[in-house]
Length: 339
Image (cartoon, rainbow, N blue to C red):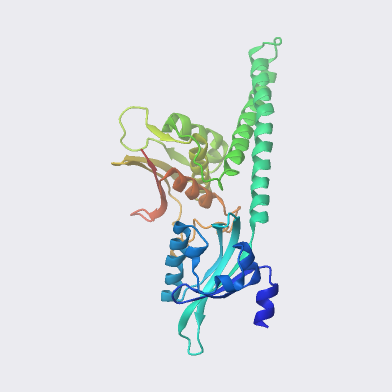
């Protein structure tokens, strides 16, 4: 049965001994490196992969054998010396003898190149669609502003009020479209271009304006003094779209829990980074949930993506994000942005 499995499975299956030598492999595994099963037996990853990849796999295999921990559905890109490049889903477990002793590694890998390419295609389509939508929105917004100024003729004040409201809504919609354009690139390794921003003027104040109605409705007070910072300008270097998403998500959460309380923004300059925070006077995150609040789909209400996306964006900036309780037991979300 094992022989039939190894000869007919579409998966890359292999058994390695404790020294990383292949004991046997599936015929599919052999085909991917342009070799026969007998050619592979007794050899190691160093015979079929680049030096760097082989060393990384050796370290991972040793860890599995030392700890007994498994690797499940880990997506990796493989570059074989034969010239073939694929994306694979990797599952590896310790190979044990009848007495339970670990004598090597059993690996089962599945070619997911088509799936990865389809996912990238979807992300590309989202990027294209949001980019194409954003252009007409900007044109509509500009036309409304011209109408308000009377460029096309005098209009009543009541109509101006309506147009101003429409203009505001279009601007918010444009920002949302920009966010989706940004989010569609989250799987990209490349960091978008950073720019110099005034933290208060370019980021915090516009975000506060977006949530003005919710803040008023929840009777929330805002402390946006950013601590004892002299002057009005606080210049940092970051990607504006990504930083707005972070603040928008943190502020949305803060408004949700700080009913009839207050929200505060903090800023502290460190040696090689800026430390920022968003605090609210609501109840603290329960202790059992604090380790998981940045995991996707962890939230019980909403999409459960806000904190996960925010932390991911900060990590891609080269910073970090974490949660702390204040001394008076209120939630405080802290993150850093490198200088």
